[in-house]
Amino acid sequence: MNRFPGLHALASLCLALSACAGSDPVAFTVAGVEYTESELLGLTESRQRLLAELTAFGAVLADDRVADLVEPWVDSARVAWTWEQVQAERRIDSADVSDAVLRARYATSPQYELTVRHLIVFSERYEQPDVRAEAQAKARAALERIEAGEPFPDVAAEVSDEPGAESREGLLNPGRRGAWVPEFWAAASALEVGEVSGVTETQYGYHVLRLEARDTVPFDEARPDVVREVARLMGPLDAPVPMADEVRAAAATEGVDAPAARFDGLREQWVVDVLGQAEQLGLPPQPPRSRLKELAWAALSRTGQNASLARQAVGSWHDELARIHPIPATAPGS
Image (cartoon, rainbow, N blue to C red; front, top):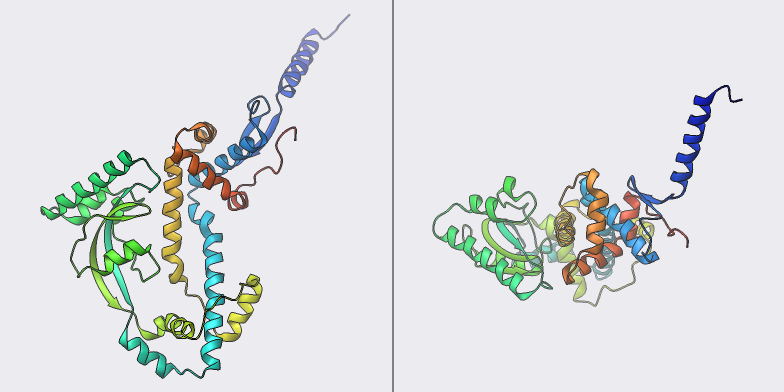
């Protein structure tokens, strides 16, 4: 005779629930998002991996960590720049080129720092012609409003697709050659202070620019570039880049320091590029974490060439994503 029927029933229920839960175990977890084996049925291992990467990417966006995502790229660029500068310094030292000679050369062709206000309508070059035409028309309409007398900051805040444009009214941090893509720099450099450009196309879309200020860069700040310019006259600076620790040691010996500001524009450029890829996948700049699973599934199945290319980009960021949100190394059942 069962003296504790209620306890027996509770135990049976717990066993049943355990068996039910065990029938669909968690296959993997990314950024706190769980995927069960039944959810992944029919997905190849490569698609499961991509789903995990898209989930990690969504979490990076949700946590506002895009700058962290691109930082390894910035570090790599910094190491490459530093190594080239080390080679250049060694070359001019061996040729006994003095700073007086470098100053004289710089005086004939100084560098400038530009302050620019702009608006952009995102439209990357691989998009369909009708999409590109619509974006170009939107930028042109914004230009016409500015030419008709509307304040540039107001139009930029309303029209520009750039994240943060509304609060900054399109004003960019001052930039020097190399901080912006070549087409943008060329358009800005051609302007007089206060002048507005025509619609300018870059790899990111269609811009309208206004030059706010043009300042000469002091020689001491421009010296690294002058050193490179003179060193390249003696031959290419193409020695293979060694390991980062070796580059840093050589830089310390030569007194080479990569200014952080030199890479700020590059970081901003890559952040914009990443957010553009997110847009192609239907991922908002800061999605709520409660929707990460839904958005990752949608991004995985989103149709169109742009979405396909964006998924390829996310897949190529595997290591950078995994550094922020670990991604399972193997798929279930592999």
